[in-house]
Image (cartoon, rainbow, N blue to C red; front, side, top):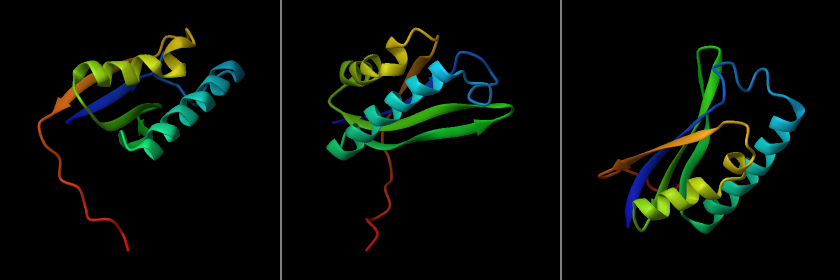
Length: 102
């Protein structure tokens, strides 16, 4: 198994603060998609990161290889939405995880 950092680049620097209704509906499908992958175990952590006037999305995933990470990114409904989102996919040679909370 391998780890990858996925950075979801928004269509403009001010997103999500100026998101349209259609964009926010697509984001809801995006969240549902990643929630399913978190429950399945391939997504370790997923969420928005606020930066400047906007935000970007991030995920750390554990998958077989780069092709599997690319497949996760390509399968995200926000990519298919046509609103101009795109993923950067970066390998992580190792990670340190905290123990599960009890």
